Length: 322
Image 1: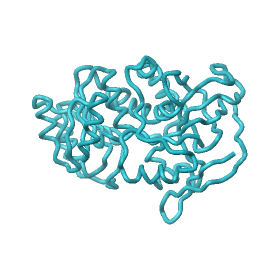
Image 2 (image 1 turned 60 degrees about the vertical axis):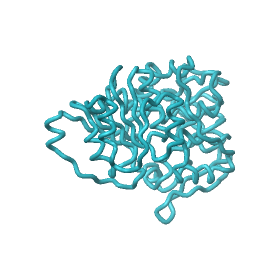
Image 3 (image 1 turned 135 degrees about the vertical axis):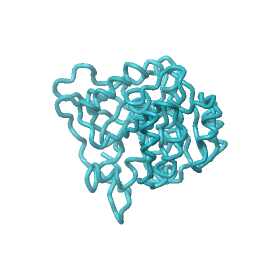
Image 4 (image 1 turned 90 degrees about the horizontal axis):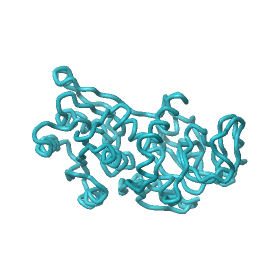
């Protein structure tokens, strides 16, 4: 089968097209014929390659049709239309654990279905599982046009919370407002805390999701309400270090946490997927929210799709059609 591999060369993640055998499902796994897969920044930098070894078939989420079942799989049958987190999705066939598989409603295109699993489950962990966002609270998302940022905004809608997003692009903010963003702040600098407080009546955000990195960490702290929570997720700015005001954390009872799939155990991954299926997937199935696809590339054009991600031009998910 055709596949794209991620290989570390000169401290960068590069793509190589290879012909490899079709994988075979083990116990508890499904083999799917991939129809579409989405790109994720965490995988397409060196860290993503290192987590899977010096080289691996790329792609961590997909939509497609069940082609074969491993031993013990009872919840699906050959021919089912599914989506989910998986491994090796930049290929014609990929392996998906049954715990990660979910039915792809007919209302979604293959591209929309492929855009849902990883970013939505990551956002679910940030906003619901650890962020504990409630109806009526305020969510702040820095770098809001990313896949996880868009999903965080949409999950907040389902919960009945209000949202603030930052972006350097006025065009991106308008697009985000069209899908439910309440307040947009146009900036790439750490200068948004005062506007966050103005939007929230002086109280600050109850939960902040930092998808930018160390350059805005302190400003996210300044933007928090009493007993606020701060999620650390991405490093678009390349800054992995930041100063922290411990007295502010102490006096305001802040909670700071990170969300990453790098060290999650299979049971932990299964628990996050199960929570998303229970709490958020019904809103996708009903049409209340829809995965936002930025652009679609042919499988052969995956390097161009990677270049678009690296340019930070997207709003939502970049998808490849297989």
